[in-house]
Structures are given as C-alpha cells and as structure tokens.
Length: 398
Image (cartoon, rainbow, N blue to C red; front, side, top):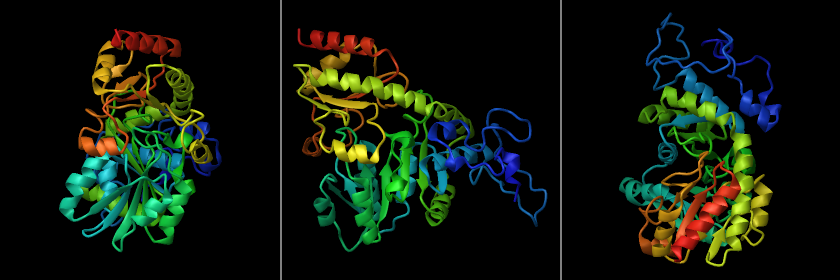
C-alpha cells in the first residue's frame, strides 16, 4: 500500500476535532506532500503502473480508485462525520447506487413528496427488479410504522422535502428503523453538511446531489454518498466499482474547489432566503409560502433541533399554473431552469421540471400544485431579487 503522506494527508492531524469552517479548507489533502501545491493534483490517468506484482499499490485503475477522486471522497466523509465517502457521476447515480444494496423482493418506505428523479427510480425502474415502495407522510411516525411489511428493508428520507419543505424528525425515524433492522438513507442536498449532519442522528447513508449547493456554481454534475460504518462502506465501494458510475477526475477537482466556500455561501444564501420568504408571506397575491424559517412553518421546532439553519430554498404557490407560467416569463434576474443551489438564483416549476415524472394526481395529493414555484435563492443583492419579483408579479396580474 502507498504511504498516505504521499497523497497530501497530514500525519497526526486531528481534522475531525476542528470547526466546520476549518475542515472545509483543511480537510487532509489540501496540500500536496510531494510538491507543496496548495490544491489537490488532478491525476488525469486511467491506469497506474504496478512496480511490484507481489506488493500491489493502492491504485491500479481509475474506475476502482483515483487519488483525486479519493481526496474528494475523504473530504465529504469528514464533513458528514461518516466512515467512507463515494463520488458518483450525478446525484441520481449516487441514489441509484445506494438502492443497489437492496435485493429482489425487498420493500422501501419513502418520504411521499420526494424529489421527482427519486420517485421515477422507485416507481419505474426498481419495480422491474421486484423492489417495491410505499410512499408516506413522514411527518407522522404512525404512518411510517403502518407502512412496515415483513419484507421492508429500507427507509428513505428527505428533510426538508423537495419541493414542499416538510420536516421529518430524523432521530425519531432512524431510531424506529434501527429497532426493526432497517437501512436508513437520507438525501441531504438542501441542507448540506454545514447545516445538517444526519449520521449524528442515526442515519446509515447520506446522499447528495453535489451538483447543487456543494458544487455551488452550476458548472459540475456530481453525486456523493457517505456511509456511517465500514461495513456499509465496503458494500457501497463494491457497487460503485461494479457499476462504474464514478465521478470524473476533472469534476472531482472542480467540486472540491466549490466546497471550500460552502460555509460562506450557505450563510449568504440563507440570509437572503429568510428575507425573501418573509416578503412573500406578506404579499397579498401569494397563496402559500413554504420555508422552514417562517414562524408558522409546520414542525419548525423539529427542524431547529436537527439543523443549524433553514437553507436557501423557498417554495411558494401563485394559485394556478397559468399564473405561474406568466410569472416565470416576467422575471429578469433568476434563471428559469432545472436545478438549484447555485450562486445565481434559480426559479423552477416542479410540475413541469423536477417532478414532471410524477402523475398529476399524485403531485396534487402531495401538495405539489400546478401553481407551485421553487425558488433557490442565490447570492445576488436581496433588494434586487425582491424588486425583480415584485415587478414580475405586478406584470403577471395586469
């Protein structure tokens, strides 16, 4: 095995004991031990020479492992407080890989208003492998308990959920799941490890669409998974290697660069999001606003118990699909686009974008109406964002 110090790992450095802001910058591979470079080297290599067949090196083929990708995987494991991290080609590749821990005949209990791509996987692809799913309102533990079957093997959570921002008590659900020997998985994309670290509350696997807040600049597509223990880590490694759904080396480096500013970005995002949510809540033409930081948000107290902040995603209902479409044609600052979590604000229309795979009647049952808009608040000046939205709303109603 190669000496870890050759990969930029500082010997005897207690990274886990440092504050989060320090971990973002000093995560163990921030200095190349060979050259002193202040950035993780990009090892643009698909294969590695073996100097001795009897003493294999740590790396042999980049699908199985690459020093640049390994630095990223160690980085996210440190931030989430897990044992091992894994970098995938996209958020859905990470989620799909995690579900490959299940077998034919297994059953999953899942948050009902889950991200549309996850819903599509669970309803269109995994049933072909004889894996079934029951969707429940996880704000009610009794409903979660009622969904238990003899073949239930996993519980999948989103909190806050996408896009209605419902809050699940992580420790409560994880504790119940452990009593029944169930695997727990949680999509932490909205909160990031800066605000919420689910492993501390008993979750087994944490997942991210790192395309969003972790990358933060709308220039990389990536997914991350973190295993809470070594056993799950070994299983996820086998799946990642076997499926080959790895993150490329350039994207691994780009993602690490984005993650270094996570704390500063999340704080600025949230400050503006709180102001925008309050403004929307007071606007006479908005029917409903969903944001955990609002005083009347359901289960805000639960969210505050398990998260250090409220995040940067605000959803609101204009009242109709027609009105929403007019509004989206009038805004001038935010992108109208699929995705979220970038330096620029992004307005998304779940009914036709993130949740287009969900049948309309199912969407409506979950509160994802035709008038619902999801606003990912960027780093622009909040006064400009509010002025732009105010003008767009006024033009919409003319």
